[in-house]
Length: 330
Image 1 (cartoon, rainbow, N blue to C red):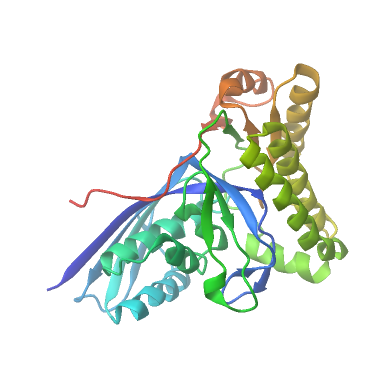
Image 2 (tube, rainbow, N blue to C red):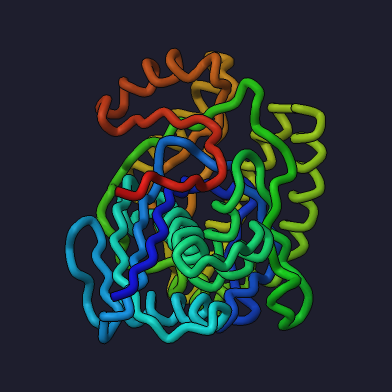
């Protein structure tokens, strides 16, 4: 009997410059580079047991055995590590999401990042973080960014060269910065990011402009991070998110991830900024939830103001998160 175990925790990240569109669907190679902030409030714990006595892979999420199709998807990802390890052993995967799954809160980012790290440990591969990011990317594109803390850039790479598309930390986020998450709906979204991306690429006339807009936004936001220029950081973040959603609204048929309460949140953030002077800026991923980039020193006062529109349990305070870390193995 032979068992090897890997156990890791990885945090989610929220893209400030969005990833929206693949140029290679098999390798998860993006149309553009992207940039994110890792958060401490949401994370995934994943334990991998490599067991020579297993006759197939097993996968549980939040204590529930997953379907054959979901397990097959994960098994395909595990194969990347089995190949590197020269192993044919099966695995038992136990994953616990401390973030709503598939609700536009980046659960797949933390999930595949934690799984990549746990597999690396269990198979004793000793891969570095850059290499791990190229592997995590093939489970979920945004997972490449969760291999690092602080501000992280995911480079789009060149052509179909998988190794050229990787993530790296570009700066610590150790300044007066935070994110307030407004949970509009924590249920699984009706249209996945994968389906939404493909539909937008195929039918939205606005998508042709997206790559050049991202290139401009990336240059602006990286300089803002370097200068610790919060105003520019926030303005570029908000505008980039709105441009991404504009591409989906212009798709045919039109596609939107927004709910009525999402618009309430966006308008509230704008009002708090313009009327009360809060330094706060909204961003949204492929889901109805709104994330508010704000000053850490203002987050309590900002939360209090937003209680006019939302319940206390809908407001989650998040601060810059760290890179994945190993958990104790019993």
